[in-house]
Each structure stands twice: as C-alpha cells, then as structure tokens.
Amino acid sequence: MSIPTVAIVGRPNVGKSSLFNWLAGRRIAIVDPTAGVTRDRVSTLFEVDERTVELLDTGGMGIVDHDDLTELVERQIQAGIQQADVLLFVVDAREGLTPLDEMVAERLRVVGKPVVLIANKCDVPAIDPNASEFFRLGYGKLLCVSAQQNRGKSELLKAIRDRLPAQTGEEEAPKEVALKLAIVGRRNTGKSTFINSLAQSERMIVSEVAGTTRDSVDVRFERDDKVYLAIDTAGVRRKKSLANDIEFYSLHRAERSIRRADVVLLFLDAAHSISKVDKQLSEYILEQHKPAIFVVNKWDLLRSKISTEAMANYIRATFPSLDHVPIAFITAKTGKNVQAVLNLAQVLHKQASARVTTGELNRVLREALLSNPPPLRQNRRAKVFYATQAATNPPTIVLFTNEPALFDNTYLRYLLRTFRDQLPFREVAIRLELRKRAQGAPRGLDETDELPEEEVIPTRPRKRPSSKKPKKGEPELWQDV
Image 1: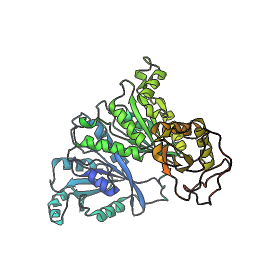
Image 2: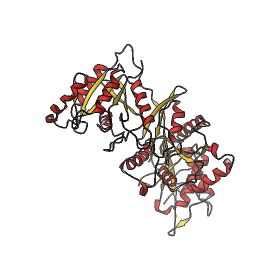
Image 3: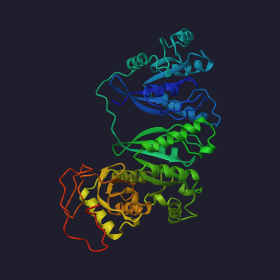
Image 4: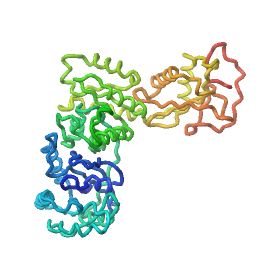
C-alpha cells in the first residue's frame, strides 16, 4: 500500500503555509502576509501515529495572480486535490466566512474525499465562538486551532488519523533517498523545467515570467529503483535588487538548499553571459565544499553560434577556483542530456563519499613534498609530519604541521591539486585542515608506517627517529620540529 497523502487547501491568506510548517515541525514553506505567495505544490513527509503521511501545501484558491499565472497555479491545486486521500480545508477565524470560502466549500463537495474543516488563527479560546458561522459550510465538526500559538495540534492529528484510508496491508516504508540535488541559479534559467523533466511530470510551474518559483520545493522521484530528492529553488537576484520580503526568503532558502544537498547543480543560461549572481552562488558552493556541476541550459539556442569547447573555456576562465567542477550542456525543455546530468551527479557523490587509507594518502603527500617543497616563510621552513582523512562528504584531509601559519594559499592549492589528481576526488571539493602537531604525537612517518584508519592522532608509542640523514635540500615528511 502506498503512502497516504494529506493536502491543505483554502482561499488565500488563511494560514495554509503556517499550518503546513507547524505539522511538518520545521520551516519549509514561505509564510508572508502577501496573498498568493505559494504557487507550486510544496510537500514533505511527517508522522501520524506511526504512519508516514505525505503532506501537501497548495496555493490559494480564487486568487488572481499578478503575473498571469492563475491558470498554472489552479492546475497545481487541482493536482494536489486529486492526489490527496484527506483534505484539510482551512478558514480564517478572525476574518470570518467569506464568499471565497463558500466557493472552496462547493468545489470540495464534489470531490468525494474526507474533509477536515479547520478554523485557523484561534490564538485564544475566546476567539472560538467567532468561528461558529463556518458550520454553515456543511462539513460537520469544526476544529479551532492556531499554528502560531501551537494550539489544537493533538485534536487535528487525531482527526487526520481517523480519516486516513484503512491499512489493508503493510504500507510501503518510504525508500531512503539515494541522492539530494539542489538546483540553483539566477532567475529564468530553466530550473523548474529541468525538475519536471527529471520527475517526468508537471511537478513545478514553468513560465517565462522571471521569479515564478518562490519556495524551495522538494520533489521526490524514482529512477532505476532509486529515490532521488530534487530541491528546486527560487531564482536568485543581486541582494540590492531584492524587491520584497518574499525574494529575501527565497534567497535564504536557496542558500539553505545548497547546505542540504549532496550535489549542487548551478544553472547557467546559454543565451546570457555569466552574471555577478552566478559568481556569488559559486562562491557559496565553494565555501560549503559541495560537489557541483555547471549546467549550461538552453544549449539548443546557442550551439550553432559557439562550440562547447569555447563555452567551457569561458566558464573555466570565469570560475578559476572551480576548475575541477564538470560542465554539462543540456536542453531541459526537450530532456536532452537530463539523464546524463543525473548520472554524473551520482558519480560525484560517490567520489565525495570515498575514503583512502592513511598510507596511500601519505604516499601521495610525500611525493608532493619531494616534487615541490614548501617555501620558506618568516625565515622558517613549513613542515608536514603526516596526513589523515578525517571525514567524507566533503572529503576532509587533516595535515599535522609544525605551524599552520607558515603555509600560504598558493602552496595549499598545489597540495589540493595533487590530492585531486592522485586520489579518487578528481571532480569534487576537498576540505583541507591544518593542525599543529600535538605534544606526544609521533615524530613522523617512514615509508613503511601507516596510521590507524579511524584515528586523527595515533596513540601508539613514539617511533625512534631514523638515523639516516636526508640529502641536503631534500624535502621529506619531517622527523622532528
């Protein structure tokens, strides 16, 4: 048996998104006094008496969208209603019964699905009598709740549980997500079209209007018996160009989506030059050490005018710090190369999850030091005693040194390039940490030593320094400070 679905419906500005976040237990949907903020179907999983339920937030019924997207928003609302097993009909206890509430009630009456009538914004019991007029809608018992004041949640969960379809068999447990993809970029680069192509359904509203997507929407889809989570984000604008609070929230959620993701897809519009916003996003991806792919969308509009090699050179020159990031050329509208991007994202996630032995890591480090010794700084020679991989996702390499301040950025970039070339992290970001060697730690490694795999600082007894002296000028994994 599949997972049951509960959809939240109602006219605009009755607190549907607040109720959604309240039931989900975390902030997902944007909450703002502006009517019509929610456009796409926003979904999440939550528990009702040990039953996993999918919760949907939908746009406001009856609103005229100022960007002429009313028909597309209505289509998303209707898809949510058809998908749902239980409908939560939300009204506003403070404003009272309105003609739009009656219109929604008539629309739900012909659906033939269980409906829970919820009077939201009943912050205190004294407001409850004002909600009695909603009995005229003909949906029986009325639940007075307040998402803002955390009032009436247990009664609401019980009402949902009583109306869920009976368990005729063992319900399918949600499959574990194999990969989380964040799709980011500036406005109108085709991110939602790409999501719909991946999910093979009209999951996101697609329009030529810039800024159509506002929420950060999680879309679960299945390919080759694996479950993926695509996080569609609002298009980002320069901070000084943010028109209102909604765009500010969208920017904040885009950054949060990058932090949540296993792999980030940075969308670039083939028909437009790279902007300051693209550079800001790339810097944030680099700061978070996330595996990433440059996705050049709408390539069909430009491929006759410029070669992929020329475009790749342009991107490399613009993002020199991300020269390890692969580049994909797609046309999301037709689905060209969409599956290839998903396959490449899986490869990157595998690289970021890889772990190398301490012996192999120190062999590569030793060769790097021999090939290019650290330069003198402040009349002191920087020394590396040994290295170990401390974590994955991102791969984190810790270098134990005599003094971290002696290593400049140029030499650290050299070490990162060497690790990327010699270890299984060729196309992903590596976090490099420098630590001063602790007192009592081993003096160094010779060619036969290998540190314990799970330990950062080994506790084995000191090894007596080798009596063999290195040749003059020969770099090494230092035996002493």
